[in-house]
Image (cartoon, one colour):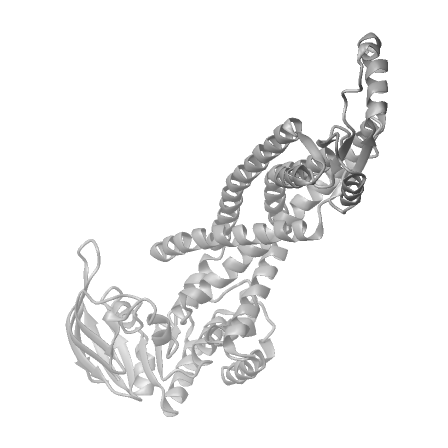
Length: 220
Length: 302
């Protein structure tokens, strides 16, 4: 589903975030990215979602060369990818369910249908009772679950999560990881950047270890 | 409803919500547009009223038609019949004796008139055409000159021509002003939209991350510009209505002093609609120019 071939990414200013990465991720896999911060995990995820483009090499997602996508084609790639951010990136000018519905609005789904789907996914992350709540009034864990609900509402085949439990205490983090395990079991491909070693041990899955832009396979 | 229409509706409601969310700045922007536009629009209305006034003035152009001495009774009757048609507002017959009497009485020329062996003056018609425009005047003049039994015609049009060219100059001025203020309108709109785009930075960046196209992001701002322009047009109409109400009394008083029943004429419905269409278009245009530039900046900065 995802392949990196001789991929390097050098940011303006000379910092090389990734160097000569070669790897393959199959459909339905559960992947963890580990390593200290600044080792290239975020860059790896950004290259997949075409938020950044590689300086070298080819990143391909479902057969598409993501680095060469035109500006007009990028939105359609992103609609098939769910993104979960460490800082949630929720919109605070609207309530919880309006945040979740946003990807469906963008895709032009009928309002009634999208509200139904938003409620279903809010139910799945345990926030159905808070659908009218202001995101500010939610706890950190609830905000992260809301962000996950938004990432999943369009039923993407691929979910990318950058430190989804980074700001959460252990109890919330375990909840969220359990949620990811459920999605994995229904066939979603998940790529999760984390430094939460407890999660790795609990969930299994393949581990890619990042160190100064180089990637090695690690055994759990 | 297909998805294109759904997107339009979504963008329009988003735009209206954003405008309603900032009533003060919306109002101020509309007011700035309205005041700017009321100048060319007001001049346009003034010119319209002036041309109407020119049509009502007693010093309207007239055509003098002098009959030949040997014109037959039938020819005279045919000419009188012709002058009853719709393009003639009024025609006054001056018989030759009457003309001579008027001449001797008015000009103090009775000695001269008394010395004349014959009355040298012809019978004449003084014709006031209904349409005072230059083309219509010349057309009517030429036609009357060709009538049998007519010896000579004279078009007293210098005054009318001067007024018409003055009004034409005024109209050109109005269009020039309108063009300038259209640019100002687009600039005001563009500036307002730029502020809106910057205020919606987070929403734009998040939407881009979850698959919004350029058009999806741009659309609400374009509607915003168009609606803001329409509000500007409404504000201009309000400014003109207030100015008209304030001026009506004094102007009609002045007209009465000159013995004229002339009244201030409000703009016609198509003119008002044209104003709204014009401001909506330029509000949209300003938004279109501004939104692309600002979006690129927001995305580069994010």
